[in-house]
Image (cartoon, rainbow, N blue to C red; front, side):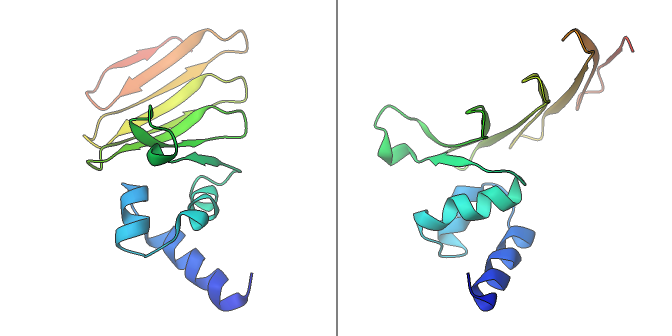
Length: 126
């Protein structure tokens, strides 16, 4: 990757906000081939992308982590969801375009020990 192109991609990564797919195409003019490059940098991990037009049964564009877990969804209206997982595959963070979020912590046995959400609900069994 040449330096000028690399700076451009890094600018996008630092500037872009969800809905990522919509913004990559409409605001930055990226090609679909560049989506994985940008999204991998945004999520700071290797990703694979499934675009809805590639799969007629898909209702949204999706991003998966290296363990094939979904980490981002976006539908054609620009509504989106983000997810994060711990090293054991437990979902530890969720956020959506409506502003709702929750985070969770698990002990080494996979038991939920902490929960907090954007509505102010907290369960703390740590």
